Amino acid sequence: METLSASAQAAELDEVTDEQKSLTGTVPCVFRPPYGDYNSTTLSLAAQRHMAVWLWNVDTEDWEAEGSSSSYSVNRIISLAESEGSALQHPVVLMHNQAIPMPATVAALPTVIQYFKDHGYTFVDLLGRTGPPGS
Image 1 (cartoon, helix red, strand yellow):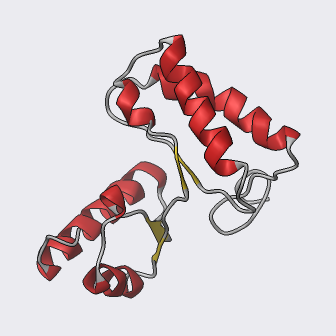
Image 2: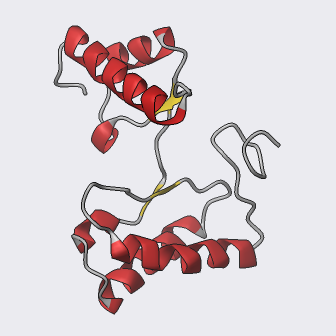
Image 3: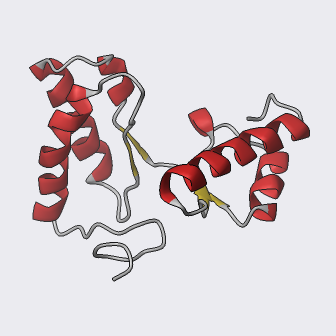
């Protein structure tokens, strides 16, 4: 985002907002800038759209699996989530849902979730709520 002009950044934010609204009927309240790159323009444009900018503090690097479901890829994702996340009080774990199949991510997710549950973590949405949406 930081390499784009203000108008190009605005167009990116508006395109994502329009796509989410068409898919879910809701507009986003948060924005994760691609690669975590942003600048003051990004922050201002997001704020104008009533969106907070959120980043992660645990990177599972699941995109490196490139759609593989190999045990190496699955175990690497699990290992990174556990080792990086266990030292944090409030880990935000980055995992991807790409257009290509991501079986390693999907395969690793139950183990990652169980690990954090077993260590006393509670899963919340980005607004801090537990339970299904609307509860």
